[in-house]
Length: 89
Image (tube, rainbow, N blue to C red; front, side):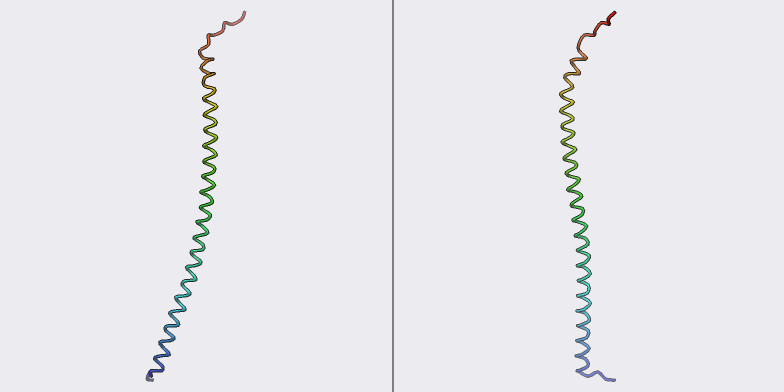
């Protein structure tokens, strides 16, 4: 069986069509993977934002506790420096 120019042209068209179809099919797969990755990144971003808010809240609570301790420190020093009481009786 000999290939004619017409047969060669048809074979070329089929090869090009096959390559195009396979190439486009690969793009769809990448789109799905990128969508999955973007979804995971969005989820991680939300978790990071939540953790940052929790850390900020904990920092504010720690600052308030330190202020309270500082205000009590003077009173404790006064009590420790006061002369001891004599027991009754």
